[in-house]
Figure (tube, rainbow, N blue to C red):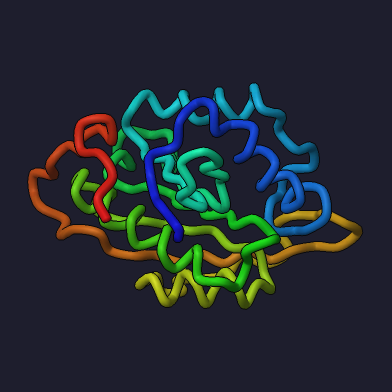
Length: 186
């Protein structure tokens, strides 16, 4: 049985292990060196309680192994973008294609909606039919492609932008609530 919960600092090693193959053997991530446990923990805590990090686990009380994770970060640095997040999801190779992402992503989206964010953006390296399918099943729509943006593994890679409305854009906008205040919304 899959269980969802907010990520904890002690999950950093498992999260780093899930992410490493995406960095080292694929073109899904444009990083070239996989972050270690400390670097991943720093990324998790850098959100200062505002942005969610959520894990899917096997739900076993004595094991609670992390199978996948999803998180949100700032879309861009400038203050006018603070109502928009960039989302990411990574699923362990052992459970890819088994529906874990389809359980995890709606929880991230529902949480971001409850927090008051207005838009979610996902950047997908292309081609990537699995990720495109997951995002579109989660309500994201393709907005555009930037050609030959990253060079990795001996070739140029395009990226696509997918966008999902989370809440109506009001005037004045409402400041997003911290994840630490809202918690995980399923």
